[in-house]
Image 1: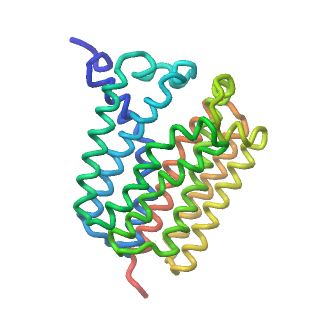
Image 2: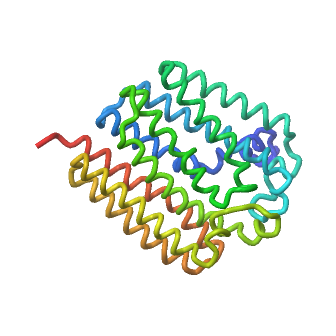
Image 3: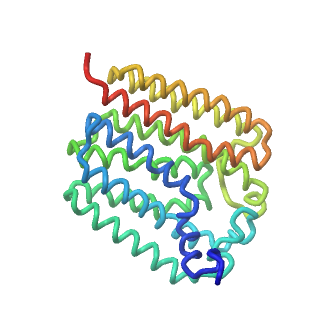
Length: 291
């Protein structure tokens, strides 16, 4: 009997990173923020289904597109040298087929929400497709990633309210700051290899001040959230979640200050729980009856 990691479909799972769901959560949390606030704690079930499944589909498609763009570089980076396109386990044509199929399924889902959401899905698709190439020339591709990962926020407001209020843009800013923070920690793992092959990243741009920059981005993200919470007069459960996120940020500092690759990668992974703390706090605060 062939082991699971030798079965043909396993390479497609690795291409789409379905075996590494951290990216799904980091993309899903800001989308849920938008859904909860736009729907005042009770968004339509179908809208939630479309956005959650769409998040999984587009993250998977984005990973395939990323590997297509990076196929000539991944073999030179320790963390990515075993990816299916880098090893030749899958062809570029197969990767394109996966990305297009998943994107088409996501587009069909979006069509069920009306033309206004379809229109907003166009820049979202552009961001997803173009992000891998920003690493060739842009000093802070992690900020571009933050826009791409947070674009579900304005789309959620359009789907539910038919408009994009200022609060949605504030949340998008919070997500950009958060993305720069956690993806810089991620980029610290690859920095030696990226320097050799000429790939840009925030970890390279910030240099020896990278940990300070990460902490400033975390502080900015929490600060924006605090302003949003005050503006909306969110109840105490949100602030409990906010405090939990803040305590985890402190833990991030103690991991990142070592600059060891394993510690940096663990810090990146732990951002799932920062997002979870904020999301659960927001949800409970919105579900609490008004006093």
